[in-house]
Length: 411
Image (tube, rainbow, N blue to C red; front, side, top):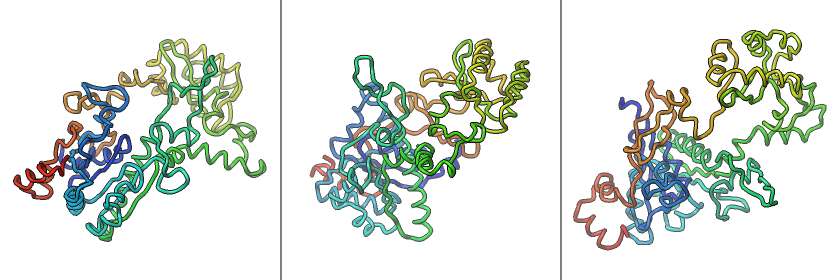
């Protein structure tokens, strides 16, 4: 792997995190940053959280903290706080991926650390953010998606409510991704001006932001109907926000193939004509030519029945090939269990191997000069790199390390 692929080589990040928000630094570690996770002596209990547990360690830890180094410091001791500040002095970024103000309570907040390193970029990522009525509420997991309106309860036959069985985890993944983007912007600013900055963001805000289309549609619909309408192809009738308006779609819909399902997306007139010509049914186009753009043939159940029978006659592979050959957008409908067999996935997303990172894991899907970043190192055990980091980064000799360990600074 060419060294040039490590775009963040030389960037050092000090991470104080608990559970999933530590993912904010994983994006940076995958791109070559030296991420040092400073943990309390008993470690981050992410290692025991949720399922699956792979040979005694959670997949959540194996993925979230791959490519990082672990240092244990008792930050309730003077020596521990001093070592943390010394690490910050030789770093570019501090990540506080936990409740806002956790580091400040230990005398390690932004105001203190900017005195140690005026160029430091200090990023806090939390559940509901550092302000507002929910700022002190404990939370994790899908709380940010339910808050953002992205997840609605499923009611079973017995009348009990349940979390939907299939749903994306948006806030806990997109929040860290936005945080990584903001951190890199902060680093660019710091290096150009010599001044650090304080960044603060919430996983709940990120979940809402990623659902901007539906939220902004609902706001737009508060305006009079002569100002905000639907699409011309629907005779300007307002459709429900987001994909809810796709329920009655026909030319943009999921269809059953002979061995699974595909998504058909011929809502543009040109694509619709290509499809009809390709399957030898130009009569369908002549009867229902549709509008030039965004015409889903909503509610045309007669056409839907015709398409149902057409799609059932071929396999998913046949339909994907058909889409390529006839310039018609048709996509496979995969599941988390089957996507790894998809040829496009296998070509673009080769798993990091178990022997390198503890379990098969997805790579960071970024190609740099034609190559993906190299496979990261295994997620660390608690304090695995304490002595190595103190020696390499702070130039502390073996005698002082032994003294610190004896005094309980490492726990």
